[in-house]
Structure formats: structure tokens, C-alpha cells
Length: 247
Image (cartoon, rainbow, N blue to C red; front, side):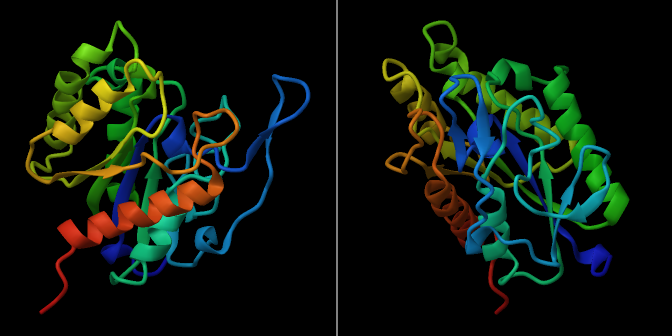
């Protein structure tokens, strides 16, 4: 694989909207879902975009990026490929995506010591060891599962701890974190989660707002079109805040 030493690595983590449900359609049988297989131009594979698969090997990235990671659900289009396609035109070397998101997961399942957290850290370290390059940012879209009476009040503290722990365990004290403020969730509690997301005051943490982006018929998951818009918003946030143009 060429450009290995200049691979720019991005961790994709959180729950189903990061894993991607764009183009996942439901059949008449309520339990049967399938991805429609449509890959828009903004999500097309490119020789310089790679992903770390479930076996910790780099391969050419293509949607659904999370099919072998969030493997108990039907995965479709997420924000990862549209993000990478914008970034690759602006940075040197290749792009490495490390998918880690799993649908339906609460933030306490992403606490240090929990399986999902430890798996993410292991995958991130393996990505660097197996192909060179540098972790440039963590993209985080999670919180729908915490929009409940039981969990909402603890969300801000848990999110802050998650960010600090990831940085410590990856030995990247100022690792850029680009998180997404929820577009969907239980209406009674969603604003409280959004407040926490928009209100985190830590260095090198920025928030992209998904509110108003189009949802699938389930009113929970972003549509393919919305995932493309989100991926591009995430790329703009990265380029604006964390990728100073050479003078």
C-alpha cells in the first residue's frame, strides 16, 4: 500500500447513525431490513481511502463501512465515506478510517474498561502499528440511547470522562474530537443530551449539529442524503479547526 507513512487516520465511533443506516429499508415483514445498495458519488471508494477491517487489516474502504463491526444490524451509508472524500482532496497522503460504532449503545458502554471502549482503543493502536500514519481525529456520534430519564443527567459528565480517557489511553492529550449533536431521540430528553453535547468545554472538542437533517421513515436514523451532508459538515469542521493550510 503506498503512502503508508503519511496515512491520516480517523476513528469513527458511537452508535447507529455513525455506523450508518442510510438506504436501509424495511420490508413488509416488520423485522426484515435490507440496505438498498445505492452508493452515491460522494460515497464512492477511492484508492487513497482505506479502512481497518474487523481483522485489524487495512483494505480499500467502501460502504457499508461498519458491516463487519456493527455486524448484528443492517448497515448502510454513514458519514465516513463522504467525510473521507472531502478530506482526501485537501491533505497529502492517504486516509485511514477506523470504524468502531455499534448501534443501540449507551455511553456507559463506552466507558474505559467496557468492551466497546477497549475494542476501539485496540483498533486505533493496531491501525497505527499495522500501517503507519497518525491518528488525526475521533468522530463521535452517540447519545440517542442516553435520551432517557435514567441516563440523561449523567451524560455530560460521562462524555467528558470518555474524551479524557481516550486521549490518555491513545497518548494523544490534544486529540481532536468532532462530535455530532443529536438529530433524533426521545423528544422528552433529547434537548438535555444536545445541551450536554453543545456545552462541552474541553480543548480541541468541536460539535457539528445534525438537527434538521432528513431522517429515514423510522424518525431515528439519518437518510443517505443526510449522511452525505453530515460527512461534509464533519470534514469542514476538521479542515476549519484542525488542519491549518500551509502558509
